[in-house]
Every structure is written in structure tokens, then in C-alpha cells.
Image (cartoon, rainbow, N blue to C red; front, top):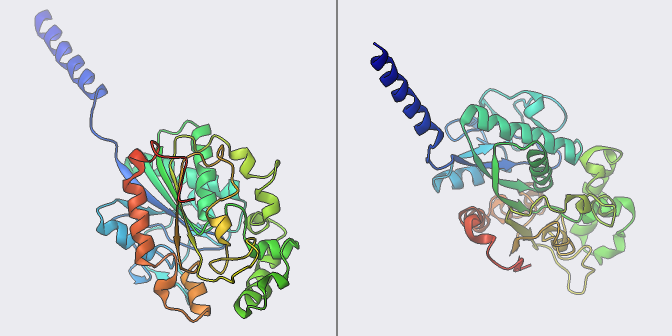
Length: 341
């Protein structure tokens, strides 16, 4: 009897030893992150909204493209305000979506960058617990790129089990937006050089920013908050040390001889900021840049009376560039510190 028990124990111990040395590759996923004042539903590779745009206006085309490439894609839920995501109507509408996640795992896209990052980090940890995801490639549109970087810092600080393989930012205001800088007085209407669309953005879109500029991510969209010795960027040094970053910027609007604080731009963010040209290498140690003659979003394309495919979030060239950034993440750390930047 003792021999039988000893044999059984040996078998169980062998089984435990085998499971502890599991050599299966880590489960990977792409997480799409929305920007300022955006509302986006939670979607999974096998679940999206069945009415309207399946993943919202900023993520639908990119989600479909990456799924077609064989990637496992999730969209992080985001709400223009606190709370769970609800169905939307009008522009970018979606409905009949997967069950919304709690507010604690939903980005408040009008709140502060760091708070948005904390909620995104909780969502990523939830993917690990519920979906068994071990590695993520983060893709952030507009301020979603800053939200993603804040999440990386939180994940590291909390020693999360999830590894961030790469970060791709699309039209992200690494150094602020010229529209927010106009609100703060750092950019003048005269910097538009008489361009009517630029002036309309400063007096229209910038006015909307000013309406919520007293707090949250709208206040943090300006150069004064993000740059300088005491700026938010400075305190992110080292966060991306092992994370390759691809920065994609649009230069649809340009005026020869215009101040680089405004020109060229995508209608919301100047190219210099989208490419992080003045961001120190301690903050962005491994970066490569891509420039496309696009607008910031399909909304900007719409008000500029341009086709939807001229938007960074819908242009097939950008969709391919994002896929290439994810695919090349394994070797990008071996390349030069600045490629095309």
C-alpha cells in the first residue's frame, strides 16, 4: 500500500513540475485606445456592436484591418465623462454592443491623463485575468497615446503580469496641440497666415477645448502642461525604456514658411508634436516616425469636406503602418534611437 501511495505522489509531483515549466508562448493582444472626449465601446475579437460602427468611429477600420491580419484585437472602453459606456446616436453611432465594463475599467476621456491611464491599466489587467492575455501592443489615437503611456507607467509600478510589447501613437499631441496652445495664448490667430480652415479651428474647435479647459485632459492638452523641466513628459523618463514606439503624424494642412508651432498640422495637432520632435530621448528612447498627408480624424475630414479615407484613423496606409509597427516590435529595440524622426 505504501508503494502505491508513493508512486501516486511521484506522479502528482511530476505533473506539478511539468505545469510550472510550461513553455507555451504568451498570449498576445492588440488594445486600441481612444482620445480626448471620445466614446468607444468595449469590443473583443469575437464581439462588437451590431448596429452602426462596430467599434466606434476611431477604431472600426483599424480593428477590422488588424483582425484581418490575424491579430487578437480589443478596444478599451472609453466614455466622454465618468461611468460606463452607453449606446450613442448621431455621428459615429453604435448600439447593441457587448456588455459594458465597470467605470473603474473604463477610460474617462475627459478626465486627467494619469487617471485615464490608471483605468486603462485596470482594463489591461482584466484582460489578463479574464482573457488570459500576457502581452499587449497598445495603439492610441490622439490623447489615447498619452493615456496608453500613463497606463504603462501604472502597470510597471504595480508589477503587472502583463508585458507591453509596443506602443503606436496616431496623431498624439506629445508636445500639446496648437489649438490648446491658442487657448493658453502661446499661439496667435495670426499664426494661421490667413488660412480660413486654420482660423475656423482656432475659433471653433479651440473654443470647445476652452469650455472644458479648467480641468481634466483638455487642460493637459497644452504645451505648458506637457513640456518643460517640470512638464508631464519629464516625469515619464524611463517608462518606455524597453518599449518600442512608433509615432504616426498627419500633415494634411500646411503653409510654406509657417511657424512649426502650427504648420504643418492634421487639423488638431501640429506635426512637430505628433512626432515628438522635442521630446527627450530619456522619455522616448526607441522611436520611429511615419508621416502621412492625413487629417486628425474622420470628423476633421468631414468638416474640411474631404473623403473619410483622408483621416489618420481610416487611411489604409496608416492601417498598414500600425500592423507593421506591431509586427516589427520584436526587433525595433535593436535599431537606431530615432528612425525617420
